[in-house]
Image 1 (cartoon, rainbow, N blue to C red):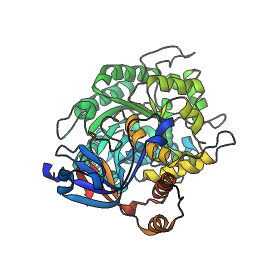
Image 2 (image 1 turned 45 degrees about the vertical axis):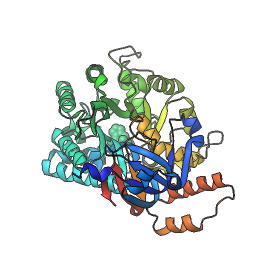
Image 3 (image 1 turned 60 degrees about the horizontal axis):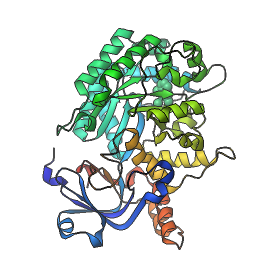
Image 4 (image 1 turned 90 degrees about the horizontal axis):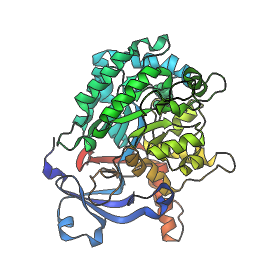
Amino acid sequence: MDTVQDRHRTYRGHLFHIAGSPHSAAVDAHVVSERDGAIAVDRQGRIEWVGPWGRAPRHVIERPVARAAFLLPGFVDTHVHYPQVYSTDAYGGGQLLEWLDSCIFPAEARFKDEAFARQAAADFTARRLAVGTTSAMVFGSAFPHAQDALYEQSLAAGLRTVSGRGVQVLGPPSASMLLTDEEEALSLVAAEIDRWHGTDPEQRPAHEAMIQTAIVPRFSLSTTPRTLAGLGELFTGHRDRGVYVHTHLSENDRPGDGECAAVRAAYGVEHYLDTYDGLFLPGSRRGGDSLLGRRTIMAHAVHCADVELRRLADAGASIAHCPVSQQFLGSGTMPWRRTTASGVTVAMGTDVGAGDEWLMSRVLASAYGVHLSEPAGASVALTPGELLFAATLAGARALDQERLTGNFDIGKEADLLLIEPTEALAGAIEFGVRADEEDRAHRQLLFTLLMGLRESAIRGVVVRGRVVRGS
Ligand code: GUN
Ligand code: ZN
């Protein structure tokens, strides 16, 4: 591990971030673009000063200075599957349920082999470092040894990780290696929480720790009412310590045989969300405790009714929006305006391996195109500020870690990316047409940076003030 001294630095470059804690409808007024900016990090890894280099106090200028063309907050991926690290671009020739059956369950079964899982954990962590994903909600493997390998790699790399083993008690024959009975499912989840929740090299409180855990039912088709009741009880017993819930919601609505219809039929519920809200008995009657709360993240939510979105918002839960994956699996897209209008926090997810982009800004590019292409009345051109927010501060909010990270506000832990434009991006930045009006020109530049960013341009990654890669 590096010394505490190493954190005591100033970063200098063109910085962009969403300052403060704006509601999603107000982010454009919170975009900060500082052409020659400085971020000073203290010995604890916190941001001590931020602003224009020209106005930085002496003690900020006099400490070691690391320069980059651009500085962005670290990316937050709110939905990424670790046991699918090698499954991007897998050909299943169908939508969600066929793809799970033919590509994903067999791929995830390989994690039963401990050496394979260790290699996969190393490769998964290396991918995160390469693309600057400083915080992630990681959908875990069914196998406890594979989860151990993930957490060990994440700690060694200095990244922020929330994860939990994927719970499956039901599934087709291809999932047989991933299944346990209900009792074992609950005891494995409890053991993972006990072993890993709140692990932190600096003994920070559990709800701020580098490693935190989640209760992760794969989706309602892989569980039963009894499993959901048991998981609800576990959540009630552990939520005070900051334990999360992570799962999939309303992703595939193919008429007749899609996921959504199958969930409603299997449980006899009115809405898919009821199954996660303790209302999993026929007629949406209560059967146990809800899995919804401020630390609950639902992936997709493409086909939700307004009442479901309102319930998510009221519970303080969030949505991981994964447009790359939704296109790959023909899932449709989460309706942007209707979803955000409900007040629910929408953050971004790669959903690797249904998503084949590890880099969050590529997911933003997909979001931009997909939502501009929504039908008339729903079509929306997301602003550069909304895009940056979605991949940074909104992610920190979804993880209930906004107090810690997500932007460059003074007092937050310094999670940032050092960017040196390469290839096409360098030309677009230097020669792209910009408005005369300064504010608009800055937003145009931010858009170019986000849309043109490639892995090769991310030259350094800093988490909690520690340089975890490069520079
Ligand atoms: N629903 C249940 N499991 C999965 C998965 O692995 N990926 C996606 N995209 N959806 C799911
Ligand atoms: Zn997923």
